[in-house]
Amino acid sequence: MTISRRNFFSSLGTSAVYLAVLSSLPSIAWAKWNIKAFTAPNLDAAIKVNYGDLPIVDSLMVKLKAPSIAENGAVVPITVESKLANTKSISLFVPDNPTPLVAKFNFSENSVAKVKTRIRMGKTSEVIALVEANGKLHRAGKAVKVTIGGCGG
Amino acid sequence: MKIRVKAKEKNGLVDAKLLIKHPMETGRRKDKDGNLIPAKHLTTITIDYKGETVFDAHMGTGVSKDPYLSVSFKGVKGESFEISAADNTGESAKKTVEIK
Image (cartoon, rainbow over all chains, first blue to last red; front, side):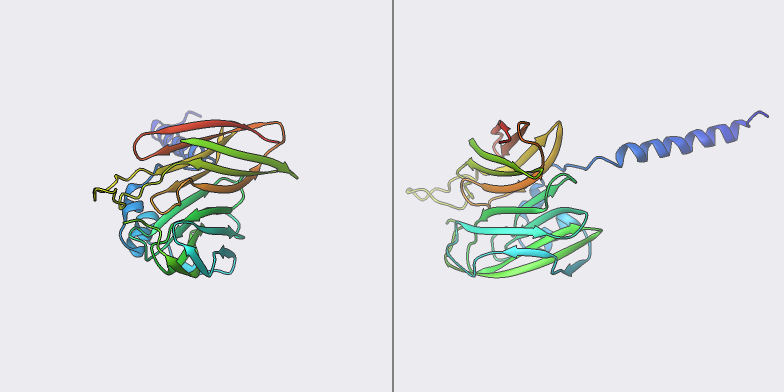
């Protein structure tokens, strides 16, 4: 039985769609550096540029370690870890810094969702970690008192 | 910029500690004549292992001078991985590291 032209082309189109989806599935999109995110002047803008309108929930599965008092705001040690499955990224924000987004760490299935780094804080502020996993942003925060600010100027 | 790395494998996980010498100028600091020192800071640090990116960090002026990063990924002693770093003025550096 011969296939009609209509059905033939329709099936071609469907398989093309499947092919396109398959080839884009396994690889992780390693994004380019986003200047808008890093120059956003307030927390809400910084989150929106990065994540759009993803829902934010507080999560005990996000572990954020930061000193309660930072003697030197120029060098504040931070450890952040996500115990959530399918963690795509962890972002760090300091809402009271001139540009709140500090860093964004992206993971593959072969890296561990835990990072240690050192950040700058202009003054006493909260440090917020947002973990993107399973279509949501999971949040943890810690207040850090800063005796000498570290943003310069 | 100079990249300094220590990478040790234990139980199939590579513990990598990176220090990248970089002034991370925020663009808000003034020199002794009162002129603003232009912003110069790292934008991305990428770790590639066996031809694939396993981790990357994007940053702005909020990361401390001489950025320090401690990260872990699946890997094997004796293999190598590559670290690339780039900053906002177009400067970049790469380093291949052997896992101990």
